[in-house]
Length: 108
Image (cartoon, rainbow, N blue to C red; front, top):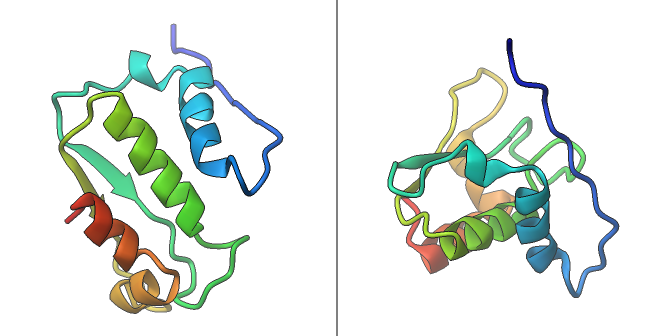
């Protein structure tokens, strides 16, 4: 029998949003499904290479997730993008503010 999906939601504030991603990952039970010793792929969502928070991964989502996973012992994190005809993933990483986060946390 397949497992049911788990959804976690929190009310947050700008001063604690990064820490709240750790709570979300915990509430969602991510540790039950991910192995800290395995390479873990981060897939940023760049629907458009210009910053659109409702369409793209926001920098605080990305950083909060990276911080939470690192705190849980995930050392092999990599980020991947898909190739589409409407976006330039590398331009999107730059314009959406991901590059300083990748550099800060050593994410290839």
